Figure 1 (cartoon, rainbow, N blue to C red):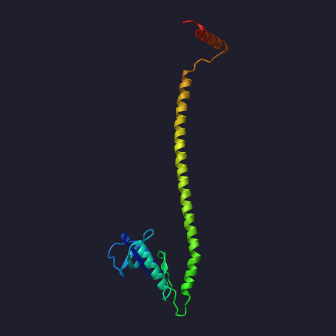
Figure 2 (figure 1 turned 135 degrees about the horizontal axis):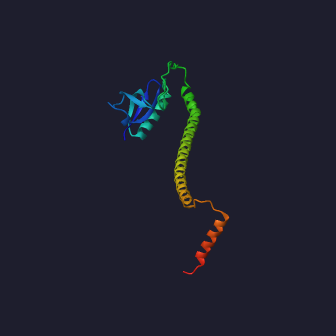
Figure 3 (figure 1 turned 90 degrees about the horizontal axis):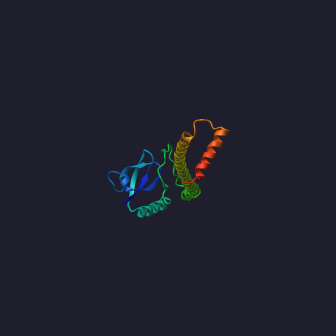
Length: 185
C-alpha cells in the first residue's frame, strides 16, 4: 500500500496518509485536497511518496531539517481552524526548535492519556452494551416462562371443582379416593 507524506501550509503541519484517500494527480510538490475527519477537507502539498515506514522516516528528516531553518514544522493532523494570525519568525530565534521540542514533550503525555481514556471509555461502553443485550435476552426468557406459568395455572384452575368444598364433601371425597386406592382390582 502506497502512502503520502503531505504538508499542510495553513497550519505548518505534516502527516502520513494512505494514497487511496486522495483522488487525482499524485506527484511530489503537487497540491491536493486531503479529507480529514467528518466532512473536512484541507489543501496540502505532497512531499514524499512511498511505503508508510519510508514516509515516516522522511518526515523525521524534514522535521529535523526544519528546526535548522526559519520555518518550524510540526507532525500531526491539520488544525481544525485556520489561524487568523500566523506567528512571525524572527532571525534571532535560535532556540525555536528547543521550544517546540519542549512543547511536544509536555503535550505528548496529555494526548496519550486522553487516548487511553477514550479507549477505556469505548471498552466500558462495549461492556455495558453486552450487559444490556444479556439482560434483554434474560427478560425475554423470563417473559416466556411467565406466559408458560400463566397457562399452567389457568389449566389447573379449570380442573378445580366448580362447587365450593365443604367439610362433609371433603371427607367423602377422601374416603372414596382411599377406598378406590385400597380395593383389589
